[in-house]
Length: 243
Length: 145
Image (cartoon, rainbow over all chains, first blue to last red; front, side, top):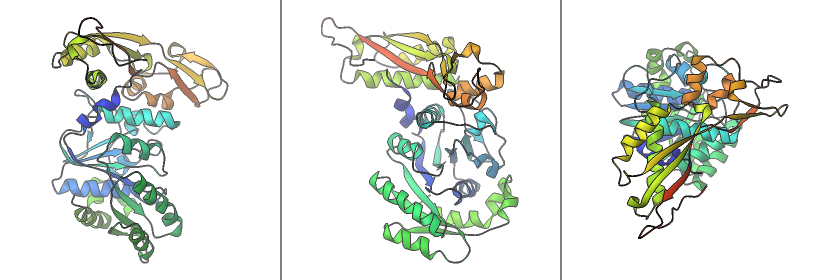
C-alpha cells in the first residue's frame, strides 16, 4: 500500500514563502493569540497570510478571528476560509464544528496529512501554524512533511511554562527545526526568565507581549484583534524574524 | 472537486514509485477508495485521467476499488460498517468526505454509543498496486503492497 498524500504536500506549499509553526509544549500560554493576532496584523499590512489551526482537539483560531466555522469551498481541493483581506484559515472546526474530536495518534497523523494534501493555499507570504500543546504527532509530522519548517516558540515567564518549553526547544534542536525566536507572552512583571531560557538555547527573544485583560473583549473581532497591544508587539516580533 | 487534490496526490505518488523505471512501461495503477470518504468515482477517475495526460505514463490505466468502511468500538469491541451507522446527515457526511477523521465528531458505536472507536478499514485513498510491463526492456514494478 502506498499512501499518496505525502507526495503532493510540497506542491501545495509551493506558493508559500515561509511556513512557521507557532508552538509551545505548554498549554494555555497564548499560542493561538500569538498566531491570530500576528496573522491579522500582518494581513492588515498587506501580507498574504494563511493560518492552519492544528490544535485539532482544541481549535479556537476561528474564535479569535471572528470566523464562523463552516464547510470549506472547493476548487481542486479545499480553499482556506477568507477572514477579512489577505488572510485564510483552515481549522478542524470547519468540519467538526464545536463537537469533541477524540483522535488517537495515527488518526491525528491522518488528519494532518489530509489537510496538508488537499488544502490549496495558493500564494502566501507566510503560513502560520497554530500548534497544540505537547510534543507529539503534530510536531513530528510537520517536521517530517515540511522540511523547511521554522518555529516560533511561545512561553510565559512562569517557571511552569519555561520548564516545559525548554524541553520543546531541546527537541526542536534535535529535530533540526530552526527556531527563529522566542516570544514572551502574558508578561505582567518582567520577562527575565524567558529571556534567560532563550539565551541558554541560543535563540533570540524576539517579542514581549504584555498581559492584556481587554483581549477577552477582542475575541471574535478581527478589527479589535489587530488593533490590540498584543498585535502591535507581535508584528514587531515577526519583523525581527523577517516576516 | 476536492477529488482533484487527491487525484493529484495519486499521480504524484505514481511518478515517485516509478523511481528510475521507464514510465512508458507502466501499465496500470489500482487505487483503493475508502467508503468512509465517499469519493465521487466519476470525478476522481476524470481527474486521474486528465492529470495522467500530463505525465510520461499517459498509457497507464487507473482502476478504482471501493474498500468497505469498518469501524471497531474501543469500549465494547463491536465491529460495524457504514450502513449500520445511524444519524449521519448530509452535512456530517460532507464533513467526513473532506476530513474522514471528522467521523469522530459524528459517529457513535451502534451498540454502546461510545465515541471511542477506530476506523479499521475503508478510510480514504491508497495505492494498492502498480503494474509495470515486465517484458522486453521493461522491469518489474517497484511498488508492492
